[in-house]
Amino acid sequence: MIFREKTRDPHSQARTGTLLLNGIEIETPVFMPVGTRGAVKSLDSGDIDELGFDLILGNTYHLYLRPGMEVLERFGGLKNFISYRRALLTDSGGFQVFSLNSLFKFERDGVQFRSHIDGSPHTFTPEKVIDIQRVIGSDIMMVLDDCPPGDASLVRIRESLDRTHRWAEVAVNHWQKRTNGQHLFGIVQGGTNLDLRLESLGVLNSLPFSGIAIGGLSVGEPRPDFIRTLEGISRFTDRNRPLYLMGVGTVPDILEGVRNGVDMFDCVLPTRNARNGQVFTSKGKINLRNEKWKFSDEPLDTECECKVCKRYSIGYLRHLHHVKELTAFSLSTFHNLSFMKKFMSELRSSIQVGKFDEFFTKWKILYERPEISR
Image (cartoon, rainbow, N blue to C red; front, side):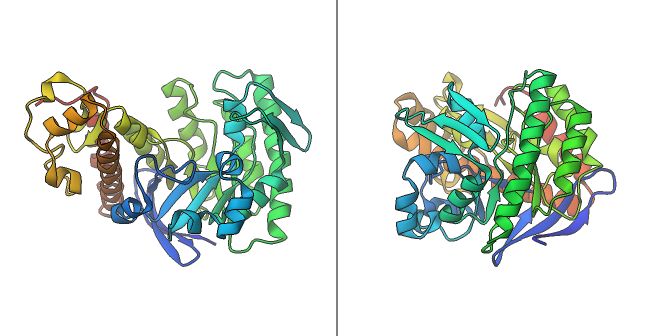
């Protein structure tokens, strides 16, 4: 058992807990920065240490292609390679196989695809994906699954469920032969069809996974369907295991997820938006490319204690983005991840003191409007 629940909100499925990963304790709900290719874009491992993140995410597909398994074996895993000492989760790479490749072919035992880099042919099977993640040295590994697009037909979703469940059983059997301190999560699919979601959840709950993930949401479906699906499955999740909502990281979506029992989140949005000039603050979002910030000598956020807010003005950060200085990316990204760290800490505190409803309402209002004005 890698999860221990601590407190629960009396009015929803929201809860706090602790993930126990090879001697590393991670407070939940938790947001995981995405380091797809072995780096959180524009930051280094020292920045991640300074920000205090104990769990980050890498991607099996990208790491398998570059730097490749020979390099990672030589370095003794990704953590040694990037000089990172905390916990690591890796996605299986299945989503990238389907989203980055127009030419892929399903087989009963896996999927054939071509590299998006050089067109070279490759095959992923449930067993191979586990073996790749063993080399990477992930604390949490994800199974290979079939994630259909948001507008997929019922027939396509049914096919994805059959394939995902079959591969899940194969993956569990292969993992259990040599767990090596690594934990395996299963992935629930089913689109926005609640009956299929519950069917998939039942199958995954019956297998000895360390945790359960919800895949295939926030992939283009209407937001009301996203919320309806979360609410529909929340009462049927296994509360003894951590629940991970994959690829979701906006403030409103995290709030909806936590209200429905989600413990773990990851998303490229805080870092990608930072590189595009959008930063998150305690008052809402700021677009640094907007002319109105040109003469502002205020920090990004007067309530933020990060090194960016302590030292630099909005006007200067706007200038960096305007002239496309690389420093704009690193400073904005550092701030956005500092914001996410503080936001998740305050979210956990609100559950612990019985004020999650107030917290939910406050932040939904702040982050459902386009941009703050001063």
